[in-house]
Amino acid sequence: MRWPPNKAWTSSAPREGHRHFEVIEYGGKGEDRWVVLKAVLDDNIQFKLNWSELKTYAKWTIGWVQLTE
Image (tube, rainbow, N blue to C red; front, side):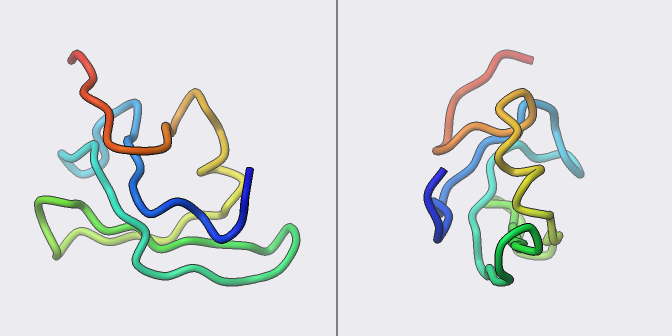
């Protein structure tokens, strides 16, 4: 997967009540790469993830995808 990361991401399961996120910050090198995600609908919800977790297709999809509950 390319670096820097895509801006828009969809979580396969709700995270703090939200599924759609955007990358607002990223950094690191090699295995220490990380991203900070912010919920699209709530600026107060932000969290930092290891890049390897974001690349896990079972948990995350690139773009904002409509998912069924």
